[in-house]
Amino acid sequence: MSAATDVLDPCCGPRMMYFDKRDERVTFCDLHPRHSVLCDGRTLDVSPDVVADFRDLPFDDGTFSLVVFDPPQLTRGHGWQVEKYGVLDADWHDQLARGFSECFRVLRPSGVLVFKWYEYTIPLREVLSCTPERPICGNRRPRASKTHWMLFMKDGDGDGAA
Image 1 (cartoon, helix red, strand yellow):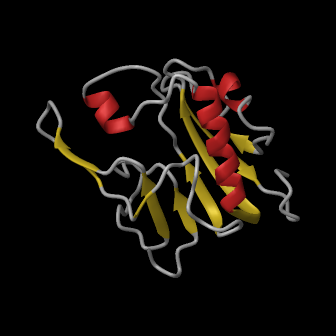
Image 2 (cartoon, helix red, strand yellow):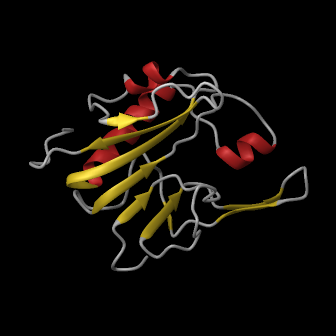
C-alpha cells in the first residue's frame, strides 16, 4: 500500500470498474484472494493489496477521503458468478450494516462514500435500511441494468452523513 493512498475499495474483487487496475491512489482490499479460469476461458484475478473483511477493516478512523463500496450482491449461487462477485452471508442485513459502519468509520470528515448495488435479489430500499446514513445523489431508476450508484458524504464533524 502506498503512503499516498487516499481511496479505499474494501471489496475490490477483480477490480472490474477501474480504468487502471493498479491505480496507486487506491488501497484494494478483499477477503478472498483467488486466481482461476472462468468457464469461458477468461482469467479471474483477485489480488488485493490488503486481505481484509469489509466488516472489520484494519485501518484507523478517518484514514480515507473516498471509499468505493461495492459489496457482494448475491445471496445464493454457485459457479462463476460466486467466484467472480462473491456471496453474502445468510444474515446479509447484519453483514451489510457492519460493512457500511466500517466504511463510514474509516472515512474522513467530509469524505465521500460511493456505493454500488445491483438489485439481483435484494431491493435497494432494503439495503439502504442497513445504514442510518442518507445518500446525497445517484442514479434514481436504472431500469435496464438494475445497477444503482449513489454518493454519501460524511459530516464535516465526523458524526455521520450530510
